[in-house]
Amino acid sequence: MKRILLALGLVALVAISAACSSATAQPTASGPVDPNGPTIVAKDMKFTSGSVEIKAGANVTVHFDNQDSAPHNVAIFTDSSASSPISIGEVVSSGKKDQVVPALQAGTYFFRCDVHHDMTGTIVAK
Ligand SMILES: [Cu+2]
Image (cartoon, rainbow, N blue to C red; front, top):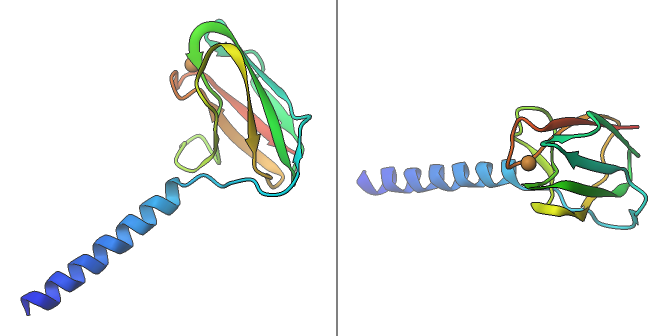
């Protein structure tokens, strides 16, 4: 009886960890990438544009331009719960960084700085 319980426990653990890893895994971009994506600028501890437009249905390079000496990044999620990451950019201080965003369906997405969660914006895929 103990063995069966132990086996069931293991199965449950494996199922839980599999569910967790798939929930936090970022999608990866495959195929061609459009290099002419939008530029997202961080300045004075905020993103200069609250809403950024991106082409839907294509992998796109987003150009991040951090004009602050403070560290920032562009972390894109499905929504403001920030539980399903789409593209997490590298944190940079006073510099530029490109990141490839995998093809998005038309819709509205959320982004923030992972260092400063009050720095937020919206990506609209069209
Ligand atoms: Cu920041």
